[in-house]
Structures are given as structure tokens and as C-alpha cells.
Image (cartoon, rainbow, N blue to C red; front, side):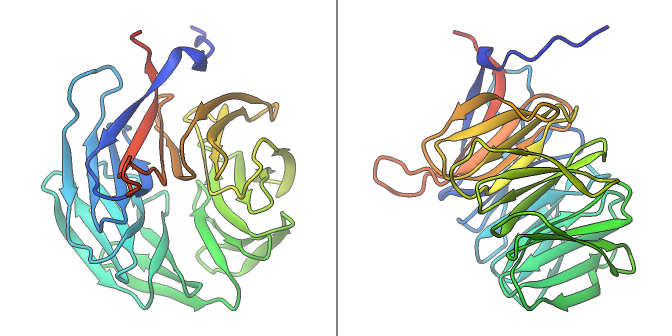
Length: 315
């Protein structure tokens, strides 16, 4: 049976409040049943979001960091384990059933980027001093550490785990063989710094967002740029493929989140926003898109809200 085409214009967003200050990162677990949010209020929260329910959403607070939670990601195999990285120099693994920190490790700098390997065995962490650390998840022991002499930004493994990607301030994407971490490709991708990266669920493509306001789409086998997405006018901060790989969402300081068709490169819908966006992520099972930004309340304080787009409009 053929899936119906998605009619984004008939969908709406819901708001989720709980954090005291702005949300920096949102991420879904592997089942698409829980959403984690990380904030500059030093906490993460986990929300049970049912796409078919309109009832009140339960959330649990993950408390223990002493600085902002800049980024978080879920264990790809265990739907109740989430990893957070913070400006307090620690990385923490949380059991979201109890809300307790299961493991934590202190690294050498303020952590801003984190990524899980798709088999759940390793976590990579980048800090403000352009240092990359790769941890063995079982004991959170360091298996690799390197300080770069230039800006490094978001990091990712490919689906098979044999390649590791680093986006850089030089406008390049560095692709390393894994686990040897020998440089495999140095892709000259953009005319300004590369900030963010997303891997398509099928592993066929990856996409990179840049300070030149472009998103580039790459063939993961050939390591060739296929097309660019050009709707943004500001540096692209965050991007994400949907669960089928048909759509890509990207966001920046522009007053919208752009949703484009991956194969045609055409923008097909824009979610209007009131602030620059920090994080977008599609649910791994449904066309639900979480997004969070620098929202202010009426007193001009950070609001601590994120939204999820993709619910059927009841009006």
C-alpha cells in the first residue's frame, strides 16, 4: 500500500514548557517515543510524546550538570539511555526510567558537540578548545584524543561505523577511516565554516550546513556533492533528515525552519519561527519535527520552550 503524500500545510506545532532558560538541543530516542531537551538552565528533560495523543505530556528532569547542556544524543540501541555534554566539562549517561545519572566522566574542556556510533559502542565529544575525545561507552574510558589547530564543529559516524566525519571552520569536511582514524577524504565543501552534519537514515547521503547559508547534499559512497539547498540567508546552525530520507529540515537565524525535498532540492514548506533556531530533529518513525531556539518571553528573558511540528490540526 502506497503511503499518502505528506500535506505539511494541514499540520501544526505544539509547545512544550519546562526549562527555565533557552533550549540548545533536542533529540528523539531510537523508538521515537521519547524526546530529550538540553538547556542553558543546566538541566536536560525527557518527554514522553505520543503523536496520537492530545493529553498532558509527562516529563522528567535530569539534574546534575553545573553548566549549560549544549548537546545531547540517545543510545542508538537502548531507548532509555541518553548522553549529555556540558560546559561543566563532563559527559553524563542517564537512565531515563529513573532520572538518575548512570555514568559520568570529566574531560578537559567545555563540551559542545556529542555523537553516538550507530552500534552504541562509542561516543565522540568535541569541546570549545577544538579537542576531540572518543569514549568507550562501557566504562566511559577515552580511546582517542586529539587537539586540532583549527575550528572543529559537529561530528558524526556513518551508518556502518567505518567512517567518521568532522565539520571544520575551514569550510571542509574531514572523513576518517574508523577505528584507525586515518584521514580518508578532505572535502572542500563550502566557502565558509561548516557547522552541522546529518546522516540520511539509509546511509546513502549526508548533508552539511555552513556559515555561507547553504546546505550541501553529498553522495556517501562517491563523496561527491550532488546539490545545494539555498533557502537560508543566514549561517545554517542545524539540520536533520526525516525517517524516510525524503525530507531535510534546516534552520538558522532566518525566521523559519525550511523543509525541502531531498531528491529535487526544492523547498516544500516553512515553519514560521520567532527566533534563531539552535536544534532541529525529525522523529525516527514519524513525520514529527522537534525544533528549539532563542525564544524570549514578554519580559525579554530566555523562555525555555521547544516545539514539535507534525500534529494534525484540530481547528
